[in-house]
Picture 1 (tube, one colour):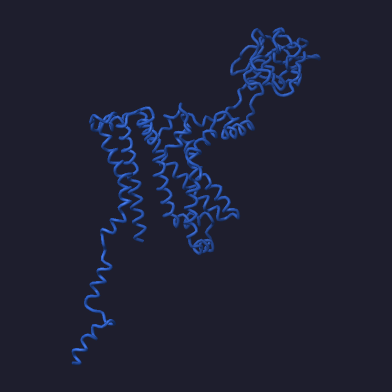
Picture 2 (spheres, rainbow, N blue to C red; picture 1 turned 135 degrees about the vertical axis):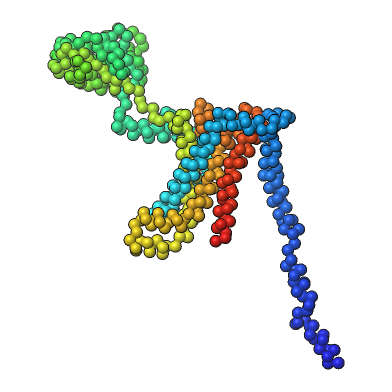
Amino acid sequence: MSASMAAPDAAGPGTPSAATPRARRGLVRPRPWVAVLFLLPALVLLGALVVYPIGYSIVRSLYDAGGSGFVGMRNYGTVFSDPGTLTAIKNNAVWVVVAPSITTALGLIFAVLTERVRWGTAFKLVVFMPMAISMLAAGIIFRLVYEQDPSQGVANAVVAGVHDVFSPSSVYPGARPRPGADLAPSGGGSYTTRSTARPGTPALLPLVGIPETKLPPGAEQAAPPHGGGITGTVWLDFHPGGGGRPGVIDPGEKALKGVTVQAVRGGRVVASARTAADGTFTLPAAAAGARLRLPASNFAAKYGGVDWLGPTLVTPSIIGAYVWMWAGFAMVLIAAGLAGVPRELLEAARVDGANEWQVFRRITVPLLAPVLAVVLVTLMINVLKIFDLVYIIAPGATQNNAMVLALKLYLTSFGGGDDQGVGSAISVLLLLLVLPVMVFNIHRIRRERRR
């Protein structure tokens, strides 16, 4: 009896029964259909937006422009024989090497420097702000920055300002002698008199070719030469409203102030003078018998700046706009990695006698290597797909010089080419170029996880 009652007690509520482990295993046993159910929306989107377009593009690249005739690999042959596509491949290679490297380097410099200034947070905000601007808006901004006219383009305004400090432009660009005057072209843009200078015989040097409205403010009435010696007048031989006599200083005709006049004998300058406010000049007696020359510096055209969007500089200029936008992105990521660098290592290196450059090169950069790799790979993938900036900034005349694969794909398929077969072949080529970078990134992530 006691034995029979002991058995139920042994299987009481407080004692685990033989069925309990099976129940527990049932509760924690993985259920694949639940995982699939949760992943299904993402899988559908991935298939519809990524897998299907990739597969369709590969198939479409094997057909002609209309999509009805199978042409095999002929579209790929067209891609690699088209000069425009070859230029795009070359430019993409330049983008992949130059843009991520410069952007990452600038981000690293900014991240390190902002730790040492009191207003580092404000600086980070200013550098990161371009990331809030769309590629379209940034393209419009830099199209204006790179305008050729220095009065409109900021870049050329700065360049022209610096240039004029060291090499001032002339006051009267484009001026030339009046036809029939004593002045004649003498090479290099200068003009020299046919006759020689003589004391007591004024030299009249009339010029035309510049509007009166382009004269410096406050230009005075031209005056005839006065006094003895070798004298003369340089003036704008143009009478407002018409009339006036050629080669004669008429009322209303303006003096040309600041013109350099040289006396030349035997190819050497023996004397020089500059015209006064009334256009007159006086040369010393040593100028007697010499010819008078107006050097080309009087008429040199105003410096027009750099042709930023010309065939040579269009790609570097667009890369500059990209760096301006993405340097803030690189700085923020690198600054986050820099915050995790152990300060005691830096201080120990300084105590051991290392200077700041050695600390930066031997400790900071190696510790930031994983973060720098993330930034570099991300930017490489990004620049392979660059489209907006090139499309907006590059003018039509030099767009072919700045061509990249994404832009070539668009123009071939939809922008006038109307050949989606070749366009699909370009898209497959672009995918093949992106794949090695993505594979490298996946391997890098796996290595970091194993650590």
